[in-house]
Length: 68
Image 1: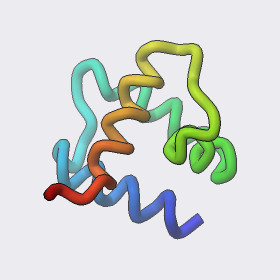
Image 2: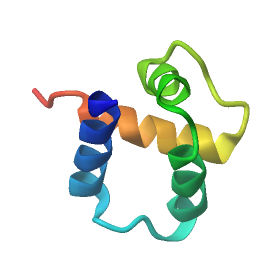
Image 3: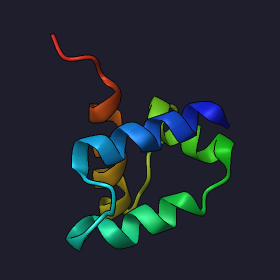
Image 4: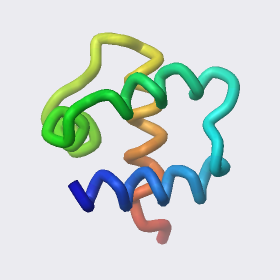
């Protein structure tokens, strides 16, 4: 899904091209989600019960919110 690709690009711009440290494993796990599941997480229609995935999902959301 193009939207997910654009969000990941913005995430990399915000946080560096390569996830590191505490974001590396959760980022890899999120990349394994299908487009619909990932879009639901990013859009807030579903939440991950895994705290590490939820943290990276929040980081993805924060990168896509226009700054004022």
